Image (cartoon, rainbow over all chains, first blue to last red):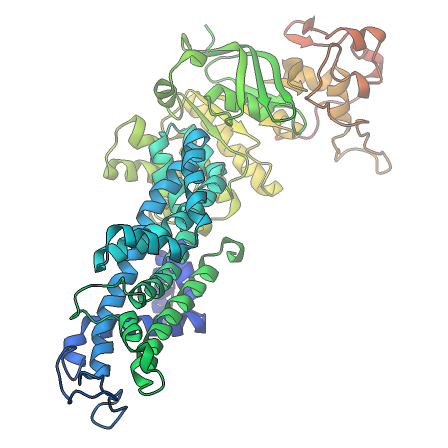
Amino acid sequence: MSVAEAEAAELSLEDQSGLWRDAFERLRRNPGAIAGALIIVAFAAVAVFAPALAPHGPNQQVGRLAAVPPGPSAEFPLGLDQQGRDVLSRIIFGARLSLLVGVVSAGVGLTIGMVLGSVAGYFGRWVDTAVMRTMDLMLAVPQFLLALAIVTALGPGLVQIMVAVGIANVPQFARLLRGSILAQREADYVLAARSLGAPGRRLLLAHILPNSIAPVIVQGTLAMATAIIDVAGLSFLGLGPADPRLTEWGKMVAENAGRLESAPHLVLFPGFAIVISVLGLNLIGDGLREALDPKLKS
Amino acid sequence: MALLRVEDLAVRFETRKATIHAVNGISFELEQGETLGIVGESGCGKSVSSLALLGILPKNGRVTSGSVRFGGRELLELSDAQMREVRGRDIAMIFQDPMTSLNPVLPIRVQITEALRKHLRMNDDQAREEAVRLLQRVGIPAARERVDDYPHQFSGGMRQRVMIAMAISCRPKVLIADEPTTALDVTIQAQILEVLRQLVAEERMALVLITHDLGVVAGLCERTHVMYAGRFIETGTTSDLFARPRHPYTLGLLKSVPRLDAARKERLEPIQGVPRDLRSLGEGCAFAPRCLYATDRSWEETPPLRDVAPGHRVACWNPVPDADLPDRGAPEGEAG
């Protein structure tokens, strides 16, 4: 590379650098985050391309009915269930539902939580008190119990589960964003923007929120992980999607919990799938936390 | 008529434990193109006064009395929306710390054009062109390439130039600079002051320079007001004030500035004691506990500003006599 080329390359690198670019650079140097990202990409790819990847349909009977279904074999790497369905294929299709559940539940919690948190943090006074005491009330109940209560009220079903887990996530997002906004609200650059005549709406949306959002993004990835666990748990308790054709990891574990001794593969493999996807999300979340931590910024 | 006329402005902060009397009735006038220095130590109410002018005090602070007239309008009576029209367009402010006063997640272009888009209704292309012009104006090289850069890609001095560009974007009639050079290296300080000096001269902006640095005032300001415990205690032309300080506090400030031409062994004379606790201001001169010239009357009655010479006013019952004045001129400034 000539000197001129090297300079040009350096310049274009500089052009792209910004706060998020810096964070991405730090993320890339973190092996845990890389591993997490790989897991999540694989997880998403499996979910998206399930029909192409799975050797069989999720509800396709490929073996015979058996009280004690056969374990892993060359033909069926993860074995068959008692209705003769391929466990690998079911897990692959189950990824779709888990991904959907994670994204939608975390999304619901994040959206509502962010609106409530920014309103409380920015307006303060009685708005803050009203919103945050309600959040405290919700936090007083363990998150899973809260989701359980909501889904009981709404009735079983996939949408209800996702909404319930999402709502149970609201308080932590609201709290996090409120604290972050309180810290940023008094920042010098906000005062500077005010001194130029920027109205309150613009202060909040253009100046304060973008600077407060980092911890919420971190929490978002972690919330996806807990959402997957919560939904699996609710399914395990029989509050999952009513449609028997829908494959869900938690439901697979639940249906076969009694066969842990006779046919462990029915419980362990879906369990592993849950653990690995949750692990991936947590690794990414931790990596993001480090990358976006303002204390580490130079 | 004066461009800006502040009369008897008082600001208080309510905290859970006490009321802080931050500003206790200050008055001043500003003509177009005039430069006024406000000098005082930390916590004397300099910055709070300027925030009060713009109506951007923190939530627990409020203006308890006084009047701020700008171009025939009473600013303290304007609604929030009306006041937003004044900010940035008529009166703008430069803040102390360029490291924290720029939003780290927005390119500087967005921040410089904030006021342009709001007040002058410029579209994005016009605003970008104007931002480039403003950056050139404040002396940022390769302005066109750098306008989309983020604050962290600039040095401290460059950031302060960006802050100045932001503040002057709508050509305000009054520019308030709150310690614009305090956070910067000495060499950069001189550059920033030069930028300000040129702007004031070319745009006929009135400048209120708030600082604790007497050298900065000496170089830039025609008139100087010395502030202590939320009051002006001495006002006058800068040269008068430096040559013949009448308030013991002003004298003390001048004596505590190191000088290049001083004898090696000459020691700086600090002002004894600590700044006044602004929670418990009673009657009497606020400076009395630290003052060598205090009389019985100083403890009992607050001295008003009185003329001691044409255009030179001092709030003291026992002003410094000629005999006590040090035999020297203005401290080392920017060739004022």
